[in-house]
Image (cartoon, rainbow, N blue to C red; front, top):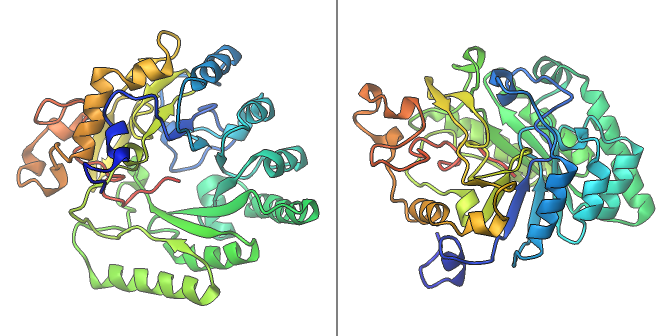
Length: 362
């Protein structure tokens, strides 16, 4: 947690031209139809970020100070955008990080990544059988692209983009994490990121690996995963497998903004789109929470609005309720629709599993 004397603390809630990290959702379309995806519950049509929106954003970024990284990701598949290569070249003056399913990393895209991308995070959620069941395509399609990327990096004398493998755990695929660590070693990945599943459908409602309280089984599983990664020489980022008291919002602490494909500035992944989710089995309705649209205001104007600054300060200072610790949780309807919390604050972050580090994003 940042100290109030730390200058980074000030830019997280006071009027400032500083944004350190930008999540840029080029599209909310995807070439896959994964069984656990947010997009399955959407009612609105998917969109690509328009050329006009990209041009507006590039102009706005000229006024932003301290920008350290742009993450091309979001809910859709960024390489599916018809102008992906052009946009990457336009943004290449900033450190770029791509999050992708890896299926569209053909030769031209691999060459693009080697020239312009610092890091790429690829989702691999199990061995061939689990991957097919979850993602609906062959794992060999992805590993073939990543093996070619590694060969072409070496041929070009490049150490970038660094490869990360992300694994989203549920009760059906958690046993495959050891195979995925081995695969990451073979692909010369820099690390494996293990995240827990936040269920978006009834089918996955009860398939979470984490629990409210620590269990011997959970502790043993974490120890075995960490031991396996250590013996294989692979760096692994592990979430807890049970609820902990500490809350830490990566978006606020990283001084980060998120821009959706249709140009809305939202606080994080969770509030980027309307969706349904299940938090410890309880169904929630999540509505997108926008602080403003780039069609109407500049990025810095939205970033420095009173509403957005108050939100960032409140989350940083932990001045918001905690539903998951509340004695009245099961009898309270407030967290069912994540509009306002019980203190009247919007959006309602009171049972956010990202803040508890159970769910992880790059």
